[in-house]
Length: 288
Image (cartoon, rainbow, N blue to C red; front, side, top):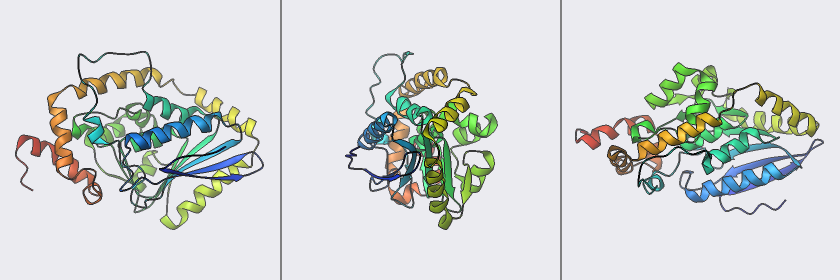
């Protein structure tokens, strides 16, 4: 298959069971999920799902400090908010993309060397496996301080991975979760020394790609059948996300995030501190 992307570099290896693919995200300055990056990931997911030759997919980043930072907040500020929020019977395009990675008959693996947050963390949680670098990987769901919620599957997948109480700490607290904690809580499969991350993930992808593709697809389908259907919850998530967008405090909070340096490298490397200052800026009490 021909892979024609600006922000993704695709590398393929042929193995006995089929192809293993590596998709390297390279969207300077820090892999914010802009509309362009989103649409490339969406298109990639559709092509991979339809390609019978592919049996394993690894998502990784060219930036050692960031996997995917989060969805573009300046873009969210432009989302339409006219009228009342309405429940729909159809998943959003972001949900559809995440569901493809979760349900496609291929192994989907995420390799995280640096920070991952917001929609990037939600995409990661939708995949089959996640591996992170010790002392480097940090997870942060930073939506609630901005006046919104994790609206790209996060409210559905995080509780299933780590349990309700820890999910509340991650989502409501918007705190930094280090790799060791993420592993202990179940968000990561493993936290590995940074110099071992590539070899472990790449060898796993190659091993999986050496096995019979029909058995891989059937085994994944059977595992998915053991769990509940997340789609009804995602529809609720989308509705509640739309309700948060319509609150004036949300617009002010997202603008404060950008004014504080959101979507710049130095500020986002300290996301827990950055997001903790938003309410003070909005209220006029931030003294930093």
